[in-house]
Image (cartoon, rainbow, N blue to C red; front, side):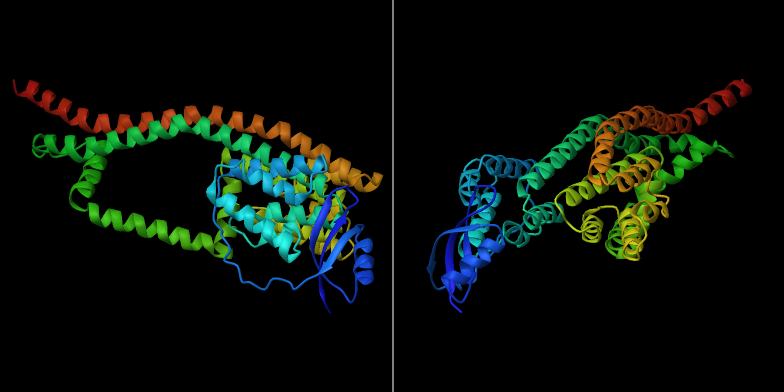
Length: 404
């Protein structure tokens, strides 16, 4: 069958271009009408068979967000997707992302691929979150709504990340500075007073601890460095395995202070995308499958997987989610209310709004609790080092006074 290059008008009013294989132009027009598009012009051509070298790699989240915001805004005002891809490439600073967008445009225009399929060829650039959302919008015919929701969520996520970075910058600088100070005291200052301590029969506990650490730093630093690197590499490779990642993700949820924030962020992602996919007409089981893939915490993803299996067996979603302790009562009640009233997407949207308000407050509470704990830890370390140096010196002075 011949290949046809076509231009068609979609339901949203935008012009779509691409390739289709059909027995004739009439059959091509029928295929497009079944998709909700109307043929403008077509031409039988030889489809390009050139194997392209695809660019891929990480880009800054701000650049990715700027790209998605422009595409979503252009789609809302009816600008064709190919024109939008042409325009947005001129506005971005990232050379890599500009190259990738040019490759996406080629895939859409010359190879007839959908936007999500073209983006899926660059998995390091576009996370599955983006690809899955856009694919859901294309499938349901509500690409504009899907793009707006994606931009809204990523913008909210960027705000939370910026807030965390600003809040943790000062504690990180303080911890690094204090660590370097302690290493200097233990490795260089403390050894200079060792001759004064050798004559003492018993040393205070802080002094013995610091003495042990000093000997490690001065004499066995290579062994310490090798052991530390070995532990880091071991944790890295264990973290990459499915069972190891599941273990660490469960551990993250149980961490004091930080764990509840991690849990809330993942719950916000679950309800946001369940609402989005349900709103765009994606089947509930498929929606749960996509949400499972884009949930970053494997423990919560496994809970979604178990709930999906229960839903396939005919169990209501509220009952399926209720079998896992990871889903909070606010999520369970919203789902149950949405199922009983037939407005599941609105119930999930309200839950998403709840998390949009709750998570920034949780982050502020976390920072408020972490700062005094950090100060206490730093003070404890400095006090231990100070006592390790001061107590033996005071003991020597007391012994001198007794001899007099």
